[in-house]
Length: 256
Image (cartoon, rainbow, N blue to C red; front, side, top):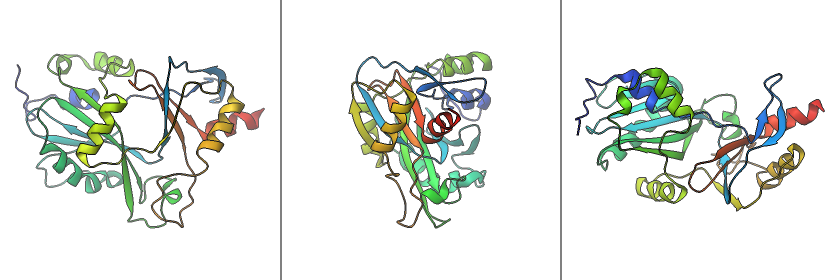
């Protein structure tokens, strides 16, 4: 087996390999105006619905040599042992203790814990979760378990990007994710319900959102606005995943 060495690694490749892919909308986006079309994502069976938290996508990258990286969705912000990290949106400050805890039990491979950091001063939705700019929360929503990493790190950037966006990254199943979260002492994004059938029309999906998630379940204080962003739907094996955001449905139906 090739020995991983963070100091010798191509960090551009590591960054691209460990980015979170785009999640498609449950109803297809109209490229002409950004509205929704009536064509919906097909799920093969049971669907798990979870709250989509409106914060900043953050990642903790556990590496085979015992090092870790902390990143935003697009950038790597800190490597283990760095004295100074990129302060972007408070990701490093809030999640460095979590990374220190996780790496202590890491046994190899490239494992990436994806968390939504929210509250504080994170984006325009922060006030929906807290009135205190110093109060942050985070929820685990996915884990990538890349144990066969050697070849992938030799691919050119275009190949890595295509692999990532074509669902090539090996993600934990719902059962594995639940176990990993418990072992790490991390809370998952709220699990809302399970179903074998989702609404097919845009109007019916808007009604489901309003009924099933009238307010966020992760507010950090009672005085916060409390408005939820939406729901993520996934199959138990995570082979199919899609998102439904309140604002997309409201905008589309208003145009009608």
